[in-house]
Amino acid sequence: MSGVDAPNADVREFWEREPCGTDRAVVADLPPRTRVWFEEVERFRYAVEPFIFSLAQFTRHRGKSVLEVGVGAGTDHLQWARAGCTCTGVDLTDAAVETTRERLREYGFHSDLRRIDAEELPFASGQFDIVYSWGVIHHSARPDKMVSEILRVLKPGGLFLGMMYGRRSVIALRFWVRHALLKARPWRSIADVLAAHVESPGTKAYTVPELQRMFSAFAAFSAEPTITAPDRADWPRAISRFFPDDWGWFIMLRARK
Image 1 (cartoon, rainbow, N blue to C red):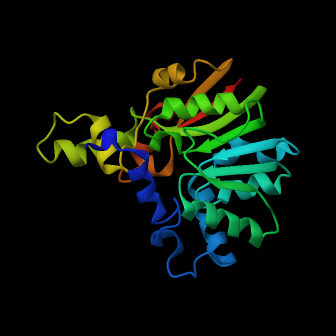
Image 2: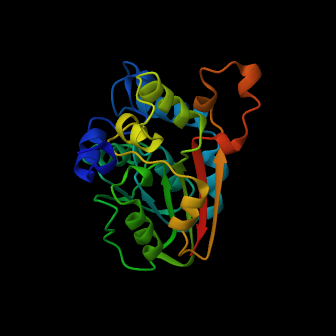
């Protein structure tokens, strides 16, 4: 089976090894799931991805009910809890759910956390004010099904905030050069290369028009590519500083039901 066709069981197996953002390059030899470990994960995340705050604007949503789809290491989930939101979180892996549960406990917060496949959310229709999902939907075997479920569980007028990968990006091109062109296999598509070589099996990336179609059932939708530090890696600063946001790996998403 190719990476493009990878089932969610394979995706789960990959992320059960360690939640996103907790690899050794980030935490070194720090004792796992201790306060110093959590704080280093948080420091690194927001140093590399500071624009999370401009999208989520956590503190503006005090008192709202928030569902996070794909809690990972719980870094953003903690921000929602700190902001005074009523939090619910789901993830495909036990590793992420337990890490997030311990993280919130360490700081004195609580969330309804569940290990489930978000292609079928176990919540009533119209339950949440906000659904948040940063860098998760593109790992699903059926992203369109996940988006449909997100729409269903949002209240009328509810808000979706998230991020998905962009195929017309510097990083996507870099992966294609490395795994197709330089290996004398230029016929490989970028989609195939990303599915086989980026994070969990079957990772996908999209163009803005493709995302507009995926979210077409929402009343309002915007997709904004954003250049990140990894986009500029391996390029001289004199060149990379001129990269437009349209070449960004991250596409920040906002949608209103």
